[in-house]
Amino acid sequence: MVVGHFDPVYAPHAQRLNQLRSPGQTLAVLLVDPPQPLLTLQARAELVASLAAVDYVILPQDNAIEELIARLAPDEVLQETADDLQRTASLATHVRQRQSAR
Image (cartoon, rainbow, N blue to C red):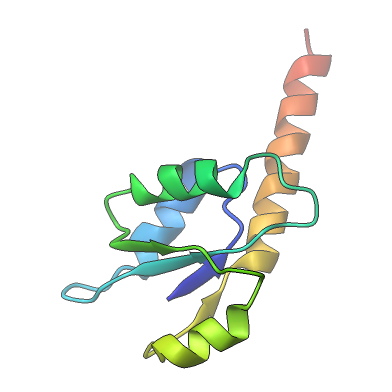
């Protein structure tokens, strides 16, 4: 199970999920909200669900993330939230640089 923001979803997310996908294994993504989401949780869920590497997208209710993980008891939980914040910051920097170059 991968826990992350995926806000916004773009190529580095897809590449990372492809790296994490093991042959014969099911890949579930648990979506959580970042501090200031750009996209709604539902929009991110639909985008992540469309990625070939992802089998299931899980949306926690009332941010009961730890409880949900305990109930599902996945073999492994990979926290991608910090990396997601870094990916979003890199994307924002890239967009600002492109815009200032015009």
